[in-house]
Length: 147
Ligand SMILES: Cc1cc2nc3c(=O)[nH]c(=O)nc-3n(C[C@H](O)[C@H](O)[C@H](O)COP(=O)(O)O)c2cc1C
Image (cartoon, rainbow, N blue to C red; front, side):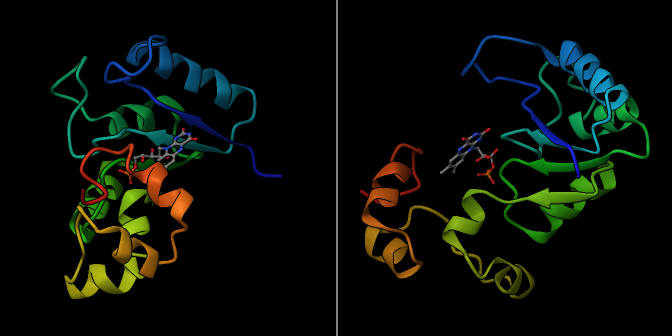
């Protein structure tokens, strides 16, 4: 069994809880307890951390968990360069949310540079396989669904 845990080290005001340093400590404890994979939800992976503007979260978590724990990073990754930047910071893999919802053929589009960026119309999203319910859910994400 592979044990993975998802942590959001900075809340961007959406939740109040653990801060960056506390989350680094939690990640270390999780490694001691047998975590194999850490999934970091950064929301804006291109940015350094708010608490330490000279440091990137992926680098900090790589130092905290050591070389054996796999790290996956998510957060506004659209292009190959943005994904590769996370690998350079110490991630083993990237995760895509909105980029893959808008571009189910992301690998091809990333290579060809034909990425479709939001806003997408409901018709375009339907074409990409989203149900009406999912399209109305995606409208909660500002700027994703064209009005
Ligand atoms: C439709 C949708 C549903 C999501 N649901 C969850 C969730 O239940 N739990 C969670 O931790 N993150 C959730 N997220 C956040 C994503 O996992 C991801 O961290 C975030 O969207 C940033 O990645 P992105 O910029 O590639 O979308 C959701 C995102 C989207 C777009």
